[in-house]
Image (cartoon, rainbow, N blue to C red):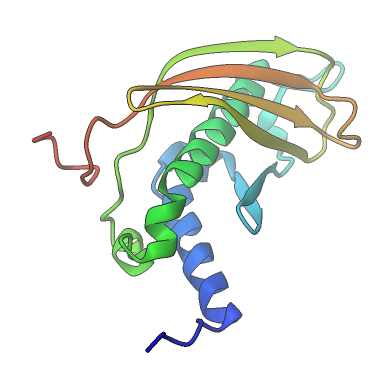
Length: 175
């Protein structure tokens, strides 16, 4: 006998809770105020404008370090979201446990290259990550940030990651 499908609201709540747990786990992400808009398995990162993000008050323009950090955060959360999607959907990852701090291991950044294409204006910025390659040990992700027009990016980055070697929790270093 097959189970009845879960109500769509339950699925959305589970996905949103898991994403919130991933995002809230990083103090730096919270400091920047980055949040994610989720549509199915697609994520769009949002960097809300704040005066502290201005690097050159004469222009004014977003600080390059804030832009780079935003692109890296977008890449790591996008990669983790993709990597753990099947475990989340199957129930092997419990969003309540994740919210309580039992997070899966996240990919570790081993390289970041940013191309600054135009000045970031004093307004909200958006970004998406595209996984170029994801294997057992290594992943490469390209992330791109824009403001008013997705076709006019302000910067893009290529980020290389070391993938978690074994299933386990963030604090479990036995593997």
